[in-house]
Image (tube, rainbow, N blue to C red; front, side, top):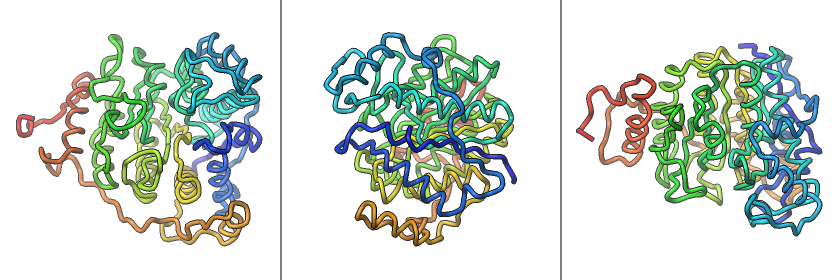
Length: 401
């Protein structure tokens, strides 16, 4: 493959989205991923461009999915770090106010808009914004470390350009609730989220029974996995739902969110994936972008709070996969990067791009195990959603489950 790829990046914007030194959403995590990708030479590839956003995100862009009242509240919070507006989700532990919050959050949206424009205009087949992925932002409230929802802004812009079918796939450990809410009753957007069950994790939503509004039944799909789910079971669930829905929906555009907080070492959640399992999901989405969406693919970042050990490696793998130049898992990290982490952070970086796992997919057709919680979760999702898209949830109605 020789896909044209744009990685959208602006040091100042990414660094400015900063809730403070004690907050988990540390901007260094994204900066390290960009630096590691650079050390691997990914931005020197002939098919890869590293670009800043070409234009700001205007209030009119934000108002595609956010209320004017929220935008005004964020502006007020930008002027006063002590500002509190719980109605709009501001001034909480998750979303404390900080100087220039509006400009910073709008800048993240500008980066995702640039990625969407690049692919829609044909300047690139794939585009990446690692600083994006703020999927908890709601139409009228900030939530879960997310001020504005850059994904919703980009998807809405694409719809306004005449794109008729957009598939959104969210692999963050947390339910992609904000994006789902924004397009809940819009059959032009299929939202798929695979996450740890809301019974155990913020935001408490994402049940398989959440399937879309009355005009879009079956256009929201949620795979809610039990705590402790590891690579192979997670990949089994992913492959048992996502490609089938993409095939039925026939999207013209794929947007994916790649929060890597599903990792076993992430301090805020309870799944048990490795970097190797996460890399396998990126490979799959790359294939599916070509198979189902004509190669039109925008990938954004998201959560991930193991700042040194996980995020840089996971998202460097993502950029490499998007650029069709995957990094073999057993590859050593460049010594220059390891030295930089030690010097700048006083931390020891992992030395290889692998966690030593060798994930594989046991296909859904290999058989349903009623005693396996992940299999039960998958079947619940399939039965809730598949019939609405003309798919058979289980042709043998296995075990009468």
